[in-house]
Amino acid sequence: RQTLRFGAAGQILEDLHNTYECWQNDAEIADVLSEEGELFINRKAMDTFKKIVRTITSSFGISGFDEADKNSKSRFLTVYFKKIYLRNATLYILGTQLVLDIFKVEDARREALLRFATWFALMHQLVNDNADLVPSQHFLTTCAKSHLDAMSDLRNNIITLPVMIHLLQTNNSAVKQVLDRKMSDLPARMETRIFREITRHWSIYIAMTITKAIKTNALEALSAAGFSTKNERAFKYLEDMCNIADNNKFYKCFYDEKLDYARYSRIKNVVTS
Image 1 (cartoon, rainbow, N blue to C red):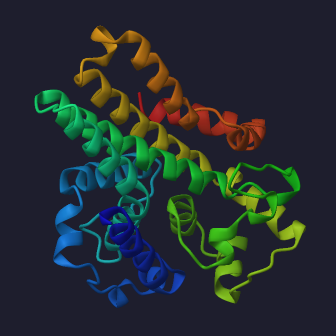
Image 2 (image 1 turned 90 degrees about the vertical axis):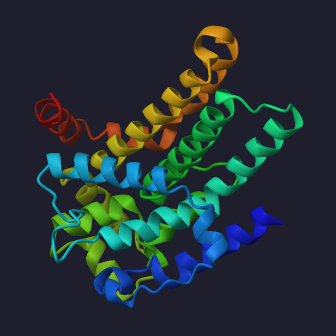
């Protein structure tokens, strides 16, 4: 019941406040969560997530998430985190709690495994948000997604992390045009134009780098639970599940833009060294 209730709250957050209209005027963002919903959200994870986003984006000269900036989108980023936490991470967290309760795990491993469940779930959703920007003409599908679902967030005026990064970098873009015009149907040429933009401006690569940092947090939590030394086989299995943050069939489309990715990688190595 909690999973359904918190998941529904996350969906409400998306419908009301994770929209382009609220991105343009985040003063419209109101507190819609119940006290129970707010208490369920892991504040430490939220602060860490926002710090990772700020640190990586600022290293590329993007200051839009700086809380000291009067035009900061930090409030919108908070809503985005709460949405993916409630709508996506809840199932992983509560499912892990149930298993830990059944096996009466109450030592330090419990906290570490719950941290892993949290970061793994957040990482998985960020991968999905990044993959959503692969054009339909690549004909990529999953068990739950058709190639015709490509760019569905954009088409529904929903702002995800790579789109936030892109909007902060560009004032006159195809992405902004789609959002301004509320274009629910995108011709192939527009999808291609958006794809070229987000690779040329590195918006998608920055979002992918943030996702990989979230993966690192997940693996650190798994190591803290003793899996890397006491249960190496299980650690390797869970580690392999996390590798979706590095390589998957959707990401290959972004990596295949070899010139843009090579330029991004060179700069990333400089700013993160």
